[in-house]
Image (cartoon, rainbow, N blue to C red; front, side):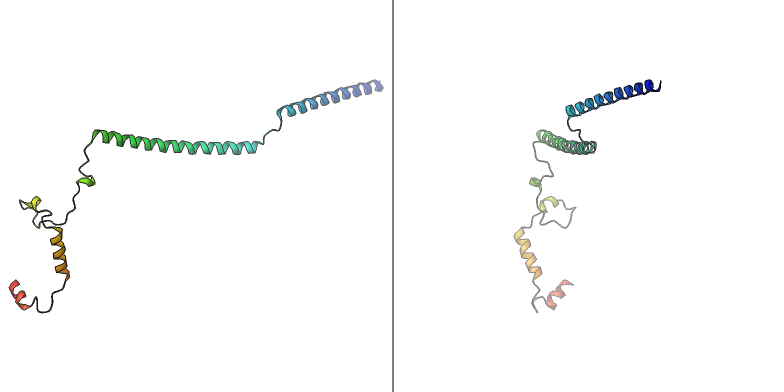
Length: 144
């Protein structure tokens, strides 16, 4: 009886061995069909790079969209307002002389009434100190 059982065990072992060999061949066939399997760490790094690139492009598209919106608003404003605004550089005049009394009736007319040449002469006159004896005691007595 032991011999029968031993033969049966050997037969079972042989069938198991054949099944394992068949499964091993099937695994090899599947591997050959799939080719080299990519490394999951490498795939994860590539996916992270792709995600960052997409986010950067999203930010750039948002910035371009904002710039186009601002440009559109400016063009719309310009089409509705063909005259230059009051605050534009074309309408600014340089102030070089102003009346002392801001309540004077002709205040507006007296703004810039002194020519720039006259202002330059007055500045030169003030910048030059008087010579000794020119503005003496007689001129000072006249002031009081």
